[in-house]
Structure formats: C-alpha cells, structure tokens
Image 1: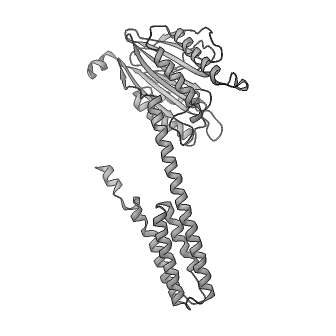
Image 2: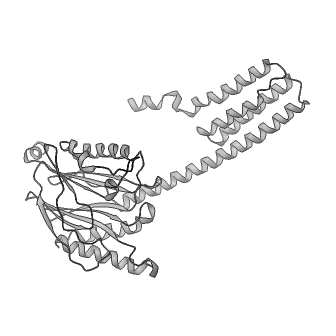
Image 3: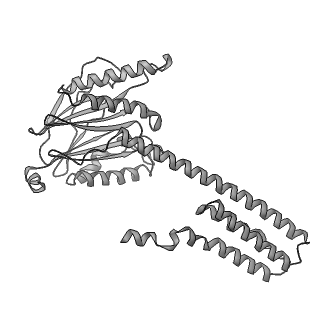
Length: 370
C-alpha cells in the first residue's frame, strides 16, 4: 500500500505542479493592476511559462503562455489601454518569449523520448547479451552488480556469465578494452564463446585458450592495420566443484578475486596470470587451486571497481571495505558495495564496473533451505 500512497502525493503530479505557474500569473496580474501607473510588473509574467517545461510538455506550456498573454492584455486595458507603447512592447516581447519557451519544451520532450528509446534498447541488449545470473546453483548462492559508466547505457565493456557442467559451476568475469556502448560487440563475442565452450569438459586453461583464439580471430577479421593489437580483454575463469571445498581459477590479466571468510577475514589468492585474451594467442594458461570452504564468499570484480577514485584521487579500497560485510549474504553484500562505491566516486564512475559474489552454503543451511 505504501507505493500507492506515494504516487498519490499531489506535489508529485503534473496537475498539482500546474497550480504554481497559474498562481503566479494570477498574483502578478492582481498586483500589477493595483500598482501605480509607473510600476510595470508585466515582464514578470514570463516566469510562469518558463517554469512549466520542468514538469509538463509543450501543450501545457503553450496553455500557460496563453494565460500569461491574456493577463498582460488585461493589465494593458486597465492601465492606459492597448494604444500605450509600453504595453504593446510588453505584449510583443511576452509573445516572443512564450513561443521560444514552447519550442524549448517541444525539443526537451523530443530529447527525453530519444533517451527513453536508447535506454530501452540498452536494457534489451543487456538481457540478450548478459543473461541474469541465477540466485542459486547447487550449493552456491550468487548475486551480481553492474554499473555502466555511460548514463544512457546499461551495459558496456565489462561482462560476466555462469554455466553448469558435470557437477561444477563455471563462471566468467571479464573486461574488454573500452567502455560503454562501443565495447558491446567484443563483450558479446566473449560471452558467446564462453557459453559455447564452458559446457565441454576441457580444463580451464584449455577454455581460456579457446576464448583467446576467438578474440584473436575476431580482431583479425575486423581490425584495420593501424588498429592491430587494440582488441583485447582481461578475463577470470572460475570453476567450483560441488563435491570439493576448493575453487579453480585461470586468470588472463584480470584482477584476482577476494575470499571473504567468517570473522571479517579477507584474503586475495596469489594467481599466476597469463596475458589478456587477444594479446598472445596460443600462449599457455595456468590453473590455480585454492580453498573455498562452506561459509566462504568469493568476490569477483573488474578493475572499474578498484580504480574508482574519490574527489582526492584515491582509489576505492575494496578489500578494506568488504571486511566489514563478510558475514552478509551475496545480495546484501552487493547492496552495500553499490552504495559505498558510488558514494566514494561521487555518484559517477569513470569506467564500467562489475562484481559477482559467490557464497558456498554450509550443509546445515542447505538442509534448512531444502
């Protein structure tokens, strides 16, 4: 019921806000008609139509402008008649300003419609390219967060995906060169290659090699000579088996994950990363294995998170901040990080940012949930 009451508040509706410019027209008119002949408040009537585009469209703005012109006409009749040069000039000036205000309102409404269409397309692209991660896969609970650097974009150069294969969960988090909408093509290629190859039984290093070849082939087909070597992506491949308290990782130039354990313990596994995908096609990839016990949370992220700067140019201290939330579930952790990261960066990130929290539930919790 609370949301319905919120929508019914009068100051949140355009009709209620329309009272303000109408009241201004009436007040200015009444005061001007009672003022001495040498006092002219007519120019102030333009305030009413100038305010209207902030909450209404061009038709309403034109209506308020017409009301202001009618008020100016009434003032002219009561203060010397229409033959007075001062009133004629005021009427003409007000009419010109009203027309300009209506044009501005029409352009603003058109721009808002364009932005709405762009956002709709971006949201559709997000759902097509980056399928929502399931909240639960086997013994794992998963939550994700994506913050695009561009206002009109819902996705950009950062990406993530998950796949289930023979009693294991495989995850990909990556960051292609560039940000925002221009990077979507390469992100789509990497996601498609992962989804095609992740269900095979090949070890993670072989999966990384397959992704490397896809990026290199894509670059060879599309790059101009002067762009050679400009298409690459960092990636972290994660494999979590159901029957063993470990996690296997293959890093291709990607930041290492953080392991959150109960008791505010945060560790960063030491990886042996290979170059980013597309830089050294056919190179060898390492496999690192670490403990991932029940009750632990694995936090994957892109460099847009740790490279977010505050007003003094300081990077976001991810490990220090998440230490206070090691006891929270994945959803709550993402909520805290979103709020804290945006507050650190002043509400706007300089690069796309993505995070995934993967929690291995304890046997007792799984029985309770089952």
